Image (cartoon, rainbow, N blue to C red; front, side, top):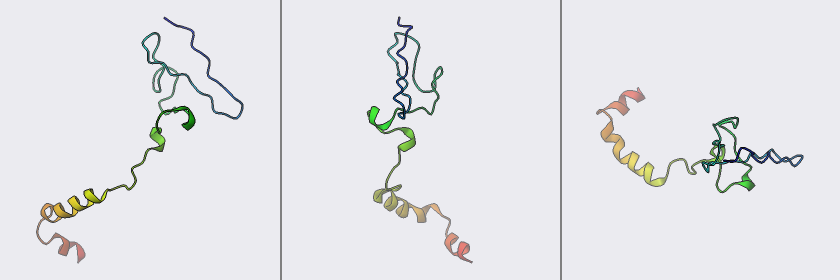
Length: 87
């Protein structure tokens, strides 16, 4: 087992990069375990995909979802509900 972990790299103004390790050859070193905070993310140029803080769905609702919602909406409400709400 490897007990010696490479130190985080620090390049002045660059954020500190923590080395992850989930190989099973030592303690688990991933966000949320040990001393690595759950919200830690690698810089965008050092990772494969976007981070959880950067994820978004655009558009928030697709045209297909909106069409299905509009089709089912009248059958989900009791009769006359729209009229009662507008009074």
